[in-house]
Amino acid sequence: MDRAEQTRQEALAKALDNIAVLDLACLGVAGHLYEALQRKQPGDMCMGAARFVLNALPEEGGLAVIATGFPMGGGVPETDGPVGAAMLARALRVARGARSLIVTDEDFVDAVKAACIGAGLSPRIADPEGLESISYLNPVYILPFPREEAACRTRCEQVLANMEPDLLVAVERPGKNTAGVYHGMNGRPLAGFVADIEPLFEMGRDKGIPILGIGDGGNELGMGVIREDLGEFLPQATSCGCPCGQGTAAVFAADYLVVASVSNWGADGIIAGLAVLTHNSDVLHYPDRERRAIELCANSGAVDGVHVSPVPAVDGIPAEEWEGLLTTLRGMIHRGTDFRGDWRRQKHG
Image (cartoon, rainbow, N blue to C red; front, side, top):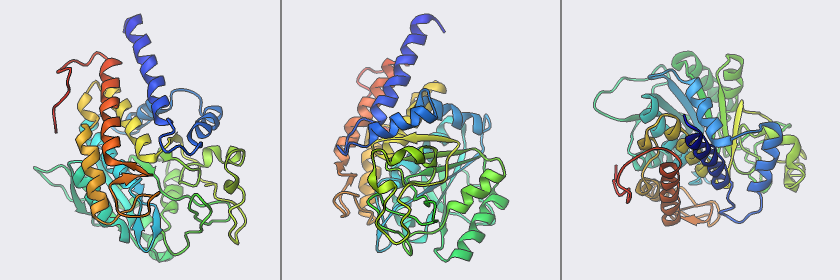
């Protein structure tokens, strides 16, 4: 790599981080999350996460288990999370031929399936005893988790024993606080609304499986990396207002953490990094797929976290804006690398 190319890629790595934490929802949180993370995990966040993923997976194949689904009540998830999980599953397949198993609550399966179809994958309900082999499809596997505590823990054990994953990922998935309570970002306790999937990650850590976390509010699984700093800019992180009295800050720390203004967008930043490192621009999906996945996810009943209704938006940002942001992101990786092709980049697929 010559000096000019190195300079270009260093600038691109910085730009990916900048756009990941661009305060798209105007909440005044993303920048503080990034500053806190830089104190604990310095360096290029998105590109570093892409390297972390590639180091965890074999050169060809492998299995990533991706947990997602954040409850909004009544058995309905928000659109942030399933779309990012689906796009990440697609990217791992294109980049390394890896299979992905998305784990989520039984109530959230329809939303995850819809997002996966939008990403161009064929969702299959997984057997907890093992994954079927399918030819002539781009499969992604989905394993529903029950909310009953003992059954949920058994399901965690089955995944690790029968699937033997190479990588664990959490995308906008609730994380427990120090009292063992899951919360929404505003302090709402989630007891009875969410399956206890966190033991899967605890057991996975004991087995030495690499763990990647993606979050945007400090209360997500994996965000324990910056738990001690969250109270400086998120009062609810230390004072949730519910009877547990321990705040919303998640205690479990991922091995590598990505923070973003919106968790789906953090996943897209990682995917852009994967495209760069594998020298394959097709790893990053085309903009129309982002919009399609959001629309289908909302059509399944998933709700936007701001409007709290099944509209095609994520954290208050409509699907057409996300399509535009993906156009910008694809343009960035073309300008920041030696990729060649039609300057209009109008290919769909």
